[in-house]
Image (tube, rainbow over all chains, first blue to last red; front, side, top):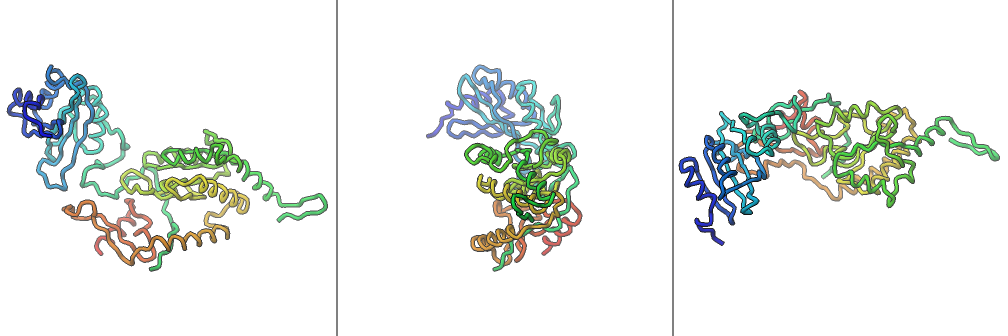
Length: 177
Length: 232
């Protein structure tokens, strides 16, 4: 099944209205993906929510991807998923973030549901959301250092809160080969 | 211990007290994960844990004798678990229920405590992911055995002969199934193209399953051991 350009309503609408800030587009079985510039995130999101042709009323998911091990130059990629209940469509919006300046505008004033998603993203990846009303850690404890889902976080590093006992001997099954 | 004289029974006081203790175990189920379903199965009428006197779960630590730690314990949960344990009145016993509570299970990551014996002393470990109700009942009976034979002032390392025989049988079984070569290093299997300077890996010794008892923690001793292993 191939999708023609005329069927990609949202992508063409975005390309028409924001010609400069659409970096890449992609479509798989009718689900569209748009990679946009960081500066125009707020205006594009507002357009996606309020425009008649788009009307993505619902925020489905927000997360980030760390592309450190693939050696990509913008290290982080924010992923937003929106769903339009009126048109029965979904769209995925991606924003690329540099490691040095990994901050992005919060879209809390557009979708209230994004509150905890952004807190989780901040907790796990250390991405700062500007103008978020309450940007704290949500899953990890306050004493925790670093952001555990970053690829450069050591795989087996743990940060206990309580003082742990040293175990003198824990029984091992003997294995003779 | 006991002797019979024409309708009289003589025994030691400890024996009677332990006997009464082992059949009136009030439990505190500290249920955090999927093992809880198996705990419920063991507690309900089909397997009926109340046959062993461990009938009533008390959801107050001050009224309970046995702490069942059922499921994964994260580091964020450790202060809670420690408080619950400290609030229980003596004599008290702890059962680590399932693989996660006993050793961290398959979670070796930033968030999960690698076995609750790092935090509180544990009497009985029940293996399984999750354990069958029969295994739960087996663990409970073993705890009863220890209460009867060892008393409340139990030495932590004391194991009764029956348990040792049981353990030896298990070793034979396991040796039959899990044979691990002498030395084998697993590199980052999931992503062989990874350009990470230090690749995570595990080294198996001949006699030890884990590289060190401190593995995964930021204690200075553990760090040194890990560094030494990486240099090898």
